[in-house]
Image 1 (cartoon, rainbow, N blue to C red):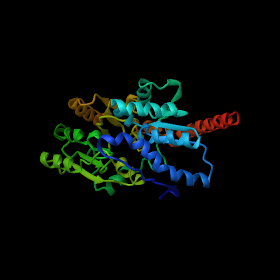
Image 2: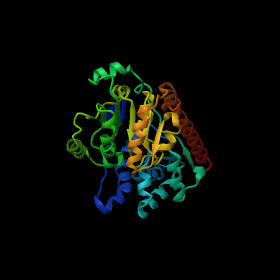
Image 3: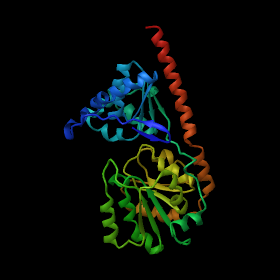
Image 4: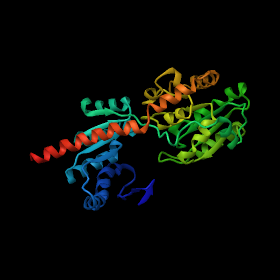
Amino acid sequence: MELQENIEVLHPRFFSIPGFFKFLDGFFMALGSLPVLWRLKRRFDFKIIDAHFAYPDGYAASLLGRWFRVPVTITLRGTEVRLSHRFLYRDLMRSAMIRAAKIFSVSDSLKQVAVAIGIQESKILVVGNGVDLDKFCCIDRSEARKSLEIPEDIPILISVGGLCERKGFHRVIACLPDLISTYPGIQFLIIGGASAEGDWTERLQQQVSESGFEKNVRFLGVMPPDQLKIPLSAADLFVLATRNEGWANVFLEAMACGLPVVTTDVGGNAEVVCRSELGKLVPFNDQQALCQAIANALEVNWDREKIIMYAHANSWDQRVAVLVEEFVKITCQSELAEQYR
């Protein structure tokens, strides 16, 4: 158990067999969570179970919902794309979503994944991720650069995320030779650390060292969310050459700090960077297009206020209001159905 912003968070353990038997994770997650939910049930009579990611979490929740006779909602967040290409996991996700009362999807692209594996379109509601405007806001650029010991007159790129292959930090580093020829002092700030998908920290550091970019690339490690506004406000451009995303929170977080975004046209990225005044999209794995887009973006006189306004129109408060309305509707329908059983 831990406290996050005065909210009690429980972490039930469950039995997991690596390798081929990972397909049992959903069942064992449900079993591992069962005693915890029994204890919670004695403390307060919960009316709904909300799960994020269709597998294993959504599958586990669908079993728990049946055992406790409460409705379940599942939010699709991105891993469903990869799992949908594997026959066994696709069936497990489908069964979980069929049992669920409602499916939320952080992007339309993920909604289409669910529809493709047999889920009714009318059952799915797209509710994108939001941005915490209390933590992410634009601060004075000069002060931000001063705190990071960065000169005023050089362009700054920034990427934030888990240091794994999918996020594409290595693809941005590979653009530096072309960029340095025009901007000799350019800096690339990398923020993040090991993730559940792997840890490419040493590999990225080796890439930088072998290319001779030690003066141009800074690894800032993992930073608390409320501190990210400092490097984001210091930068000129947010870049994420990712292989796939559901709805990347970091785009809105960067925009809330006034940054345009250059990213790949994969997953839900085009749904976040949906207008030309917000940034540029490039095809995935087109290194030349990525380098050219970054170079072009550094020459654009972006309307930072318009970018910030877009982020403000996509706050978490607005997203949560939609979700709460849906939760209330689902629980009322469930209680009504119970009365007629």
